[in-house]
Image 1 (cartoon, rainbow, N blue to C red):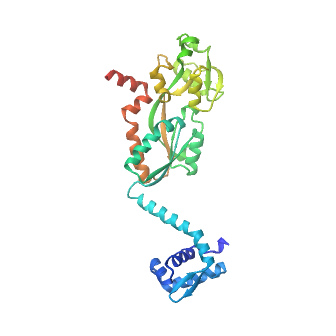
Image 2: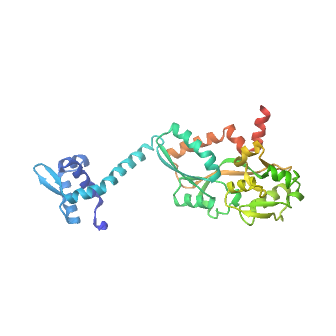
Image 3: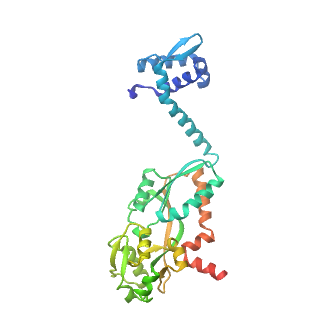
Length: 327
């Protein structure tokens, strides 16, 4: 049935119904009265029913017309609202931004950033998707997200076989550290973080192959044949932190996730003589995508917030220590 309907005639019907006259509809659509009459007559023929009863100079909708109007009116209202939003978005930030982010970064930092942005641009709304890189990359590729923040260290960048279709811009560097609870450090490790001692204890990993842990040992000790004793495999950074806090073993996490626990002393960072591993959180979008005004303004605002000293110190221990020396 729908394949036989000219949707332009639905628009004519909508205005005839709203104006209750052919003259009024013609004026609204800026066409002749005869054109309106022809469209309406053809439309009635297509659907096989009369839509209006003519009384003097006005039209009275039939029961069928009232039913049809009830169905299509929400569509026209939403269409009108959407077109206004699109036009408005060309002159000032407006409409919805669909953003992806790693769970830990997104839950910890995005709400405050979005709130600050909406204080300036209150016609912008947001839809946020949290997830692992595989999910977020797929959603950007399919157009479900306008762009996404991605963190690839803990998954070793395994989802970028087709990276040529993406534009990837660095946003902020985060330290990747090895942690354990204060109790585990004192009772199990006896506060001895030598390589020999580290190889005899237990670990929490994201994958059974423990690539993140192996990368940490390779970076800090130059060891490529390390096989940590994995006693628990989990699928999120928060789960690693919780497992560490419950004295199950050691795990790899971004510094900003445990910033408060390290400062309070409940979690201990395992250090070597080398600097921490640096992972770059990046902004991912389709390479050929032209950002809207709303996206551009948000990118500018986001970059400004992330560059603040109070944010940087949560991501980098070097920044945190430098701030401490200035006090």
